[in-house]
Image (cartoon, rainbow, N blue to C red; front, side, top):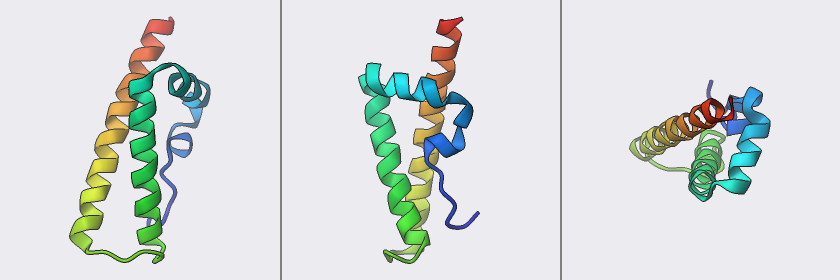
Length: 84
């Protein structure tokens, strides 16, 4: 949905505790999380009209956000397998 929040805690509320643990204990996850968060906030500001940019730039940022989300989810899923 246009202008909808896509931060990881909204996207994956069932993994809230694990996301927190990974942010605290996995520097790679923490860096990817911060990158994702930065892009998410930028995209949200653009969609809300706070910032203006080209459609091409917005689409590029959305693709980056999706790629980071996929990477983060892969780490979350791998961590869940290790926990068992």
